[in-house]
Image (cartoon, rainbow, N blue to C red; front, side, top):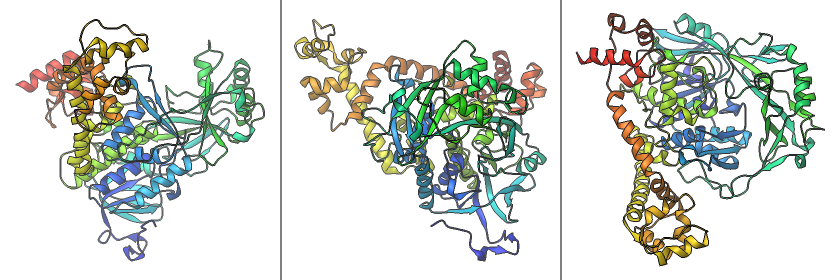
Length: 640
C-alpha cells in the first residue's frame, strides 16, 4: 500500500512544519520525478513525492517505447547509476531491437516497445518498496521561500510541506494548453488538468519562463487495421535487455508494422492547414525540430511524396495502436480522413485524435551544473521543465537532481558527470552551457566521445561512481570488476597469441574469406569486419582453448572483448583526445569572478559568462558566443 500522510501530522488547514519536514520533496510523478524520488530515498534521504495523479506515475504520455538512438545509451547509464528506468523497461517489454547494428558500436542503440499500462504499474510497485519514501496526491502551486532559500511547498488543498530541498519535475503540465484544430483547452495531457500558478510564483522569485510545444499522434483500434497491407517489423531473434541486473529475458514478442503516407494523404491534410494552430499562429511555443508533426513534414519537405509511419502496439492485452510518425494538431476530421487513405487504414477506427500541447518551461541556463537553480538555493529542476523532450532525457535529469538534492542536504559537493564520462554529462552540459529554445533531444552526434560512451560499457564507466554515492551495492561493483577483468584477459591473450594457417584456414574458407599463409596474431584475424569472435570460439578449437584458459567466460564477455579488439585504435585515440582536453576541462573558475572587469573579453563573452557562470574552462568553452580567443584570455587571466 502507498504510505500516505497521517492525520496526526496535520494542524488545522496547514501541515505543521514542526512535525513534517522532509530532506527532499519531489513535485511531479513523471519519469524525472520517479527517478529523483527513488535516488534520493535510496541514498538515505527522507523523501515526499507529490503527484497530481498517483495512478499515472511515469506514464508514457507519447510513444510506448524506451530507448532508441542515443536514448538507449542513456537508459543503460541510468541503470549503471542505480536508477530504475532500465529495470522497469525490461519487466514490461513487448519487443527489443538493437538499432544501427550495420554501423560502428558507438552507434548501436537499444530500443524496446513496452506495455504502457504495465510500465506505470511497475514503476509504482518499485517506488512503494523503497524505504524513506512517502506519497501525496495534490497540486503544488507555490514554493515557500525564506531568504532566497526554498524551504517547502504549498498545495491546492492548502497544505504546507516543508523540506530541505525541493525538486520540480512538472513535465508538460505547467499552464498546459491542448490544441486540436481550432479547438483549444487546458490540460497537462488529454483528459488531465494542468498545473496552475506555479509558473507565476517562480517568475516572482526571479526565474524566467518561456513556452514550448510538443505533440502526440492518433491512437487506432487494431481490430480495424489491415496488417497484411503493411510491412511487419519483428524484434531481434536474440533480444537483449537494458539493465545490467538480473531482470527477466524476453521470451515472446509482439510485432510492429511499417506503412507510408502518399500524395492523396498529403492533399487531404493540406485541406486542414487553414485551421491548423501551427500555421495560424495560435501555437507560440517552439516544437521539436527532430520529431515534427505530419503537417510540418509536408510543409518542410515538399519534394517528398511519402513519409514512414510505424504502427506500434500499446500493450500485451490491448487492441490500441500508436501511429508513430503521425503527430498532428490538425482538426480531428482531417486527421481521420487522411489516415484512412494510408495502406492498411481503409476501415480504421480511432481511440482519439493527435494533438499538440503548449506548456511552460524554464531556460536551463538558469541552473547550476548540479541542476540547482542559481536564483533560489535548494530548488532543483529536472525533466521537460528544463526544455527537454523524451522519457529518457527526463529520467536522467531526475536521477541527477535526486542525487544532488541528497548531497545538498548532507552538505556534500555536487555530483556532475563529464562529457567524456556519460551521455548524461553531455545532456546536462549542453542544456546549461548552450541553453535551448526548442525541445532538446539527445543524439549520438551530440557526444564528441561517443566511441567511449557506448551502450555496452555503461556499467564499466559508471558503477563505481554509483557505488561511491551509495546507490549501487559493493556486490554489484565487484561483479562489474570481475566481468571486465575477464574481458581484458581475453583481449590481452588474443592480441598476444598467434594461430597457424592449418588451425584457422578451414574457418576462413568456410566463410569465403582470404586464407593466411603463415602464423597470424589472433587479434588481427578478429579485426576482420566479417569475423565474429563468438564464431571463432565455437568453430576453432585452438581459440576456444585459449579463451577457456583465461577463466570462466560467457557470451557477453566474448562479445565485449571482440569489440575492444576491433576498435582499440579508435578507442585509444578518443581517450587521448579526451585526456588532452581534460587538462583544461577541469580547470576551475572562481565562483565570484567579475567577467565585466576582464576588458579583453568580447562584450558577448562577458555577458554570457556572467549569466551562465561556468564552473570550469571546459564548460566555458562550450557556451555559444564564447570564442577560442575569449577562452585564451580567460586562461591567461586565471593564471595571473
